[in-house]
Amino acid sequence: MLGLSADQFEVYEEGVKQKIEILEPETQQPLDLALMIDSSLSEVKELEFEESAASQFIGKLVRPTDRLSVYEFADSVTQLAPFLSNVPILQASLRRIVPGDGTSLYDAIFLGSQGLMKNSPGRRRAIVLVTDAGETTSSADFETARRAALRADSLLYTIVVRAVKNEGGRNTAGEHALETIADTTGGATYYADDIGQLSDMFDQINRELRTQYRLAYYPDPRPPAGTYRNLEVRVKCECKVRSRKAYYSGGKLD
Image 1 (cartoon, rainbow, N blue to C red):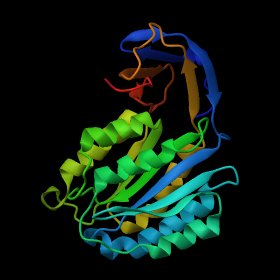
Image 2 (image 1 turned 120 degrees about the vertical axis):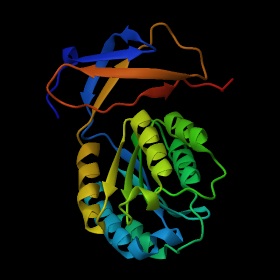
Image 3 (image 1 turned 90 degrees about the horizontal axis):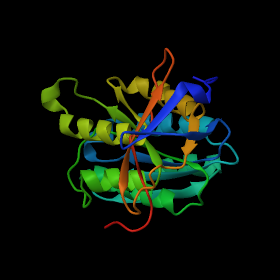
Image 4 (image 1 turned 30 degrees about the horizontal axis):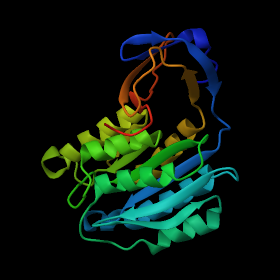
């Protein structure tokens, strides 16, 4: 929702209200995005459709000033294309996806975040993850992945493909973990109970990435370096707003 003013927002850091110095819509800010496709054996039946939907997403999303990188993850994480704005090359990289045995879900978030951090600052960062939410082979754990996304200042958007609709056959623990990380970063989790829903969900993510606000303030009191700080954003309007729930203050971790 665009058209909101600064006096409609309130920002709290560790429960202390902050003075908002900058409020800007970010519809034109360049974007760096890591697109992560689950290529584990549990996803094999859906891979062709996922590749097609992801290809359409790349074609609609990427502008000349944006950069997108394509990754696949199974028992390991592989970068199929570096951060580029060349749509045909990015789309072609999707055809090199090869099914694997395990699912390194947390490693995907961790390495996607690391890749984003290597890029120049001053650009929006996001990870879009397509998966069935299984986790079997990661070296990183949940908290390592969550903190990596926060340190990268990256949003996490997840599309969970639920081929099995009853809870007994789904990775509900993985679904909850992804919801938590997405909520912390200010992103979102979408559930596809029908593979045909993927294109609509990619379109929704595309629209959201182009209709966001940037709020800036000088933390008071100033936080210690190398700490994770809790945030809360409140909005005075008849609307629902997602925002990041924490940030990393920079410097070395204790």
